[in-house]
Image 1 (cartoon, rainbow, N blue to C red):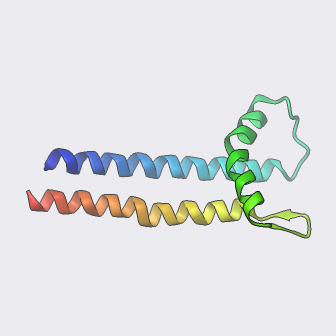
Image 2 (image 1 turned 180 degrees about the vertical axis):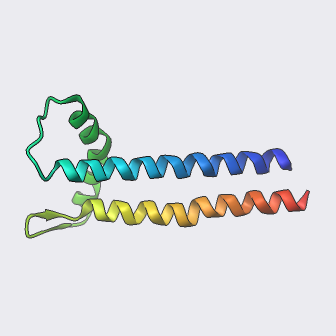
Length: 102
């Protein structure tokens, strides 16, 4: 059982890191949207290609524009925080319970 517990613990840590990294990518995308970035810059292209699929789906599903301001990154933050607090914490708790069972 300790192998499964270690696997769930590692999975939770990796998932938390990936969610945290994606949140910072969305923050960077929101910050560069305030200026007129060079669309041929590789960093700008990466930020757009990494975030646009998620933001586009949210914009298409929910009208998140108000007064010319795009609120879809805020909704992405809320979803990421929910996943960090619920899914990652659940994986940690499952790993802890497996350790104490065996």
